[in-house]
Image 1: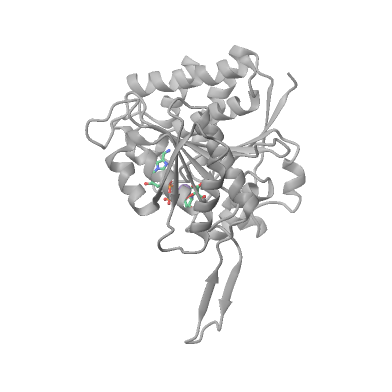
Image 2 (image 1 turned 180 degrees about the vertical axis):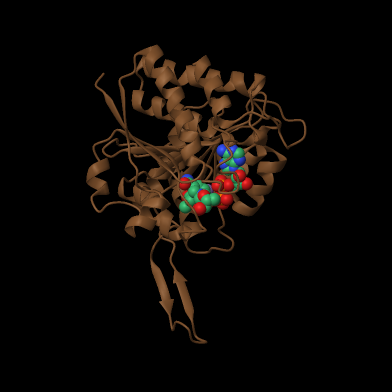
Amino acid sequence: MSTHRIAVIAGDGIGKEVMPEGLRALQAAAARFGLPLEFTAFEWANCDYYLQHGQMMPADWFDQLKGFNAIYFGAVGWPDAVPDHISLWGSLLKFRREFDQYVNLRPVRLMPGVPCPLANKKPGDIDFYVVRENTEGEYSAVGGRLFENTERETVLQEAVFTRKGVDRILQFAFELAQSRPKKHLTSATKSNGIAISMPYWDERVKAMSANYPDVRWDQYHVDILAARFVLSPERFDVVVASNLFGDILSDLGPACAGTIGIAPSANLNPERTLPSLFEPVHGSAPDIYGKNIANPVAMIWSGAMMLDFLGNGDERYAQGHDAIMRAIETVLVQGPRTPDMGGTASTTEMGTAIAALV
Ligand code: NAD
Ligand code: IPM
Ligand code: MN
């Protein structure tokens, strides 16, 4: 297999602290299974770069990155210095849209050793995927301000749902459901209140379901779905949602499963014509940055997802993925653990312990 080139962008805050731990685990997997990985670090797409250059990335960022097989990404955002919509629309959200990473795949799993805030749940009870539409929907830049600074001030922001955009995320979600033992799909909408786009989404779900007669499916308004995540998470298998609903559900799910410090994600361009991006669900956590106490597991698990995607069936990559996941599970049970999991270990200690077991 030819070399896989990986662009490394640590970003801001704890992105800079967890990235070395993600790389440590990946290097261990590469050494053990002979994986041809080549890492190239980029010192842009962070708020320090913005403060120096007035933009988050150089003008030729697309050309610099487009030839990579994947982007391994920490987190971006330093809201005290740069407004979040500027830093995120100047980096991560550009990557998702311009590299057409239309699937945001976010596993929600109660892992052994992780205390669950929900009563009487054990590993296996919470094990599903949030499949989040990642390029359109509520995250559109279409709109504007009218009559600014007058009493008539009016602000508009459109949600955009294209047939291609909706169908391709639904197809991915149905395929994923079909590949899993439960073969179940739940669609999150809000067709009672948001009366144009959401009934359209429901129609496309129904149409797509005809192609997957062996997949059982249901749909819920996202408000009651949020309640069901807490009350009966065991009933979910694949949950498909628009960009905003998927964003919210993919923080709620991991919180139900213990801590967002371990939740990974894969921003996929399934056609593989452009790089996919692998990153924790969490952000740059300014409140804990600089203390070396961030949980590195979300970053490390995202790296395992990256191996799975890059390998695309290659046995050595699958072994690398599995070895990292086993190492994560062992350390979640035995420690050392970071403070968000009730431990006293540092980011480095937990990451080093995981890499040593890969
Ligand atoms: P956040 O995820 O950064 O933090 C939320 C809470 O979870 C904080 O209390 C934080 O300490 C804790 N937390 C997060 N990750 C943790 C970890 N690995 N270990 C232990 N605790 C952890 O969300 P926020 O506070 O809403 O956002 C902070 C900044 O990050 C903002 O600029 C935001 O826009 C940005 N953000 C970026 C991304 C991304 O790059 N993908 C995602 C979310 C938020
Ligand atoms: C996420 C984040 C981003 C999102 C923010 C930082 C723009 O919350 O990756 O979940 O809303 O998609
Ligand atoms: Mn989010």
